[in-house]
Length: 424
Image (tube, rainbow, N blue to C red):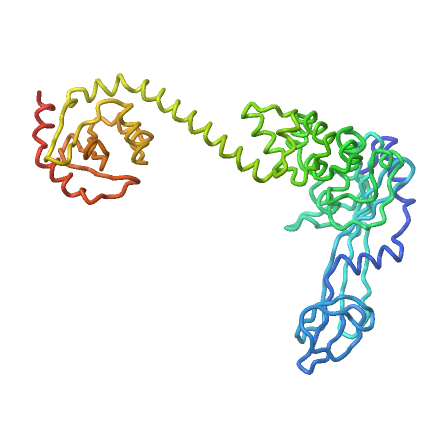
């Protein structure tokens, strides 16, 4: 794509002035960004696929090549060729631009030969002093893979895309050169496993990122840079973060700590009090407030259930009031009709069954009995009002009890009591 303004024209001009990869940079990429192997035959002769040196080796797993000193993994195989590739980044500056240069290294290792990798620049991110980015790169082609490039195309102004974003988050050459502004804003030579482009943009535009970098709150800085939602969390709890920092509290697990602060807020605790926000044991306090919130949610659910029961009471009475008062007793077991929606809710809660949540009280052809001994619930019974047959009889957690058959026989022997109410 042709440059559309003077800034883009200037960036393309500067791109042509960037220096090629240096020997230390190429050596680092070869040594650090791809795996190295020693191929061993049955005879025990092993070949370093990096330098081509051969020696007799009996060890398994990892070892050092006696010639080049590279740590290699021993593989017993007759293969003679390895093809591999990796992406890596070199971070540098030119004029007032912070530049993240992206490179592809392609390696073909042949047995008995010294490796000769090939390097190709894929593109670069140009970040100005206001955090705005411009991408210079190769043209992408249609294909199944994200990193499908037209290697013969020129390095031109391109739209940012997933391929460049992914590649710029790969290996980073450890000798990083940054602008004076980024250095002033706290950068000390490491990206701390944060996407370099995102980190530089935040340091240039977000004072909170600068503060976190300078105070060495790397966990929270990583949290801020990971997504827009998490950046909003940092903004929302910024006063809490500053108070914790002033009290010497170091956040070691940012995700858990922010979740903990959110739970404190929901429990109406003071999230600007060091007593709460600087726990000695974050894991224990986090778990404790999880249980507290669960209790609060359970209370809210019970209150909501009671409200729903009250709303359904009128229609329930209209349908089932004529059956109220039916009681069946064999001398030990008493079976009674449930006479309110609240009784349905209490029965369901006591027996851990879905009697209330599944709205059995609203089923026109269903009548629910409760079988009890000395007031203790044994089983809950559903009778079909059309057939007058027991549909189900369940104890705690829907399990049958030792009284199951007796209860069903007791109901079956007294279905005339139900029939009388239907025909009345």
